[in-house]
Length: 359
Image (cartoon, rainbow, N blue to C red; front, side):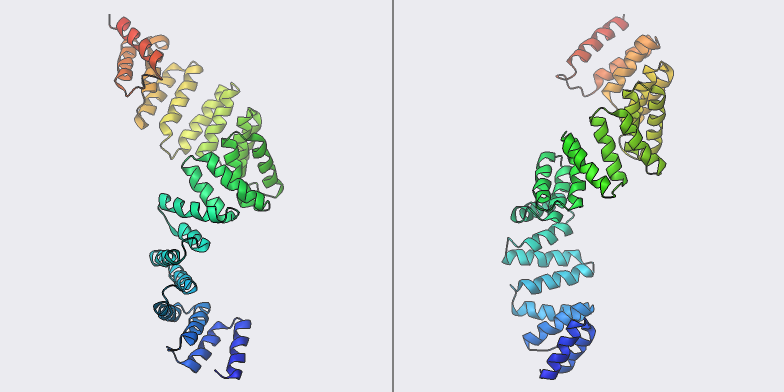
């Protein structure tokens, strides 16, 4: 390559005119150069210019010449990832790890490309062990650990990364709900206040602060926070449910019923049965026994529960005074899959009531 051509190529690189750099290289070395140095230059320029087909062909030649060239393997993985072929990209990340099993970048990229949670966890865990201060890996690993209810481990992962970079608000945001769940309420308060001071009043933060207020037994404050979501038309099934619980704790049964009804309307989850059971309990406490029975029966339509049959038995036995119905529900309760250790008293009581009502 002539000196003038080298200077021209350098100018193209510096001004990021990669398409013209690729044209120059093809002009000098041909469209499919045999020299590996020229091949590497054309592969790079074509890749940067977005000509992935040419870049792929040249990188494959380089890989065939040296199957352990990590830079080439990463380049091929990147090309396939850009094209949406994640499976091939993963194959090249695995080839990198076959050469260097502790390659942090390969572990991180492979983990992020995986759908299988167990395999994803394996690579994230190893990447975190190599570089525990990397915020992205710590966040992803903590998220996966939280899904598996390993909250203490998730907290420690985030703590190490946060201590290394206290300006990383993604880590702070992940710590907030974890601290609430682990009853680290002072840390949760600090995290929430920092996020709010830095302009993050997202529904995630407001909802988490509402849960924190509930943990502190400040139910009025929790309600005020959940109502922020309502005013912004961002209320969810869970925030409505938490609002209902807060009103119940404040003995405001009217609003508790209203928000439980709102929760049911918003419900799109398998929890609908338990929501109806709560509504039934609130109706019963309010003295609306027929409405309570209706809600208990609706609960059973969504999720059969021995506890609901027990409640129906008691309701009919002592409030509605329908002994035949009470007997029927008590028998249904006994037919359920009962935990005899946890339900010893209830089982004994129901057996006695069945004897009395059967006479």
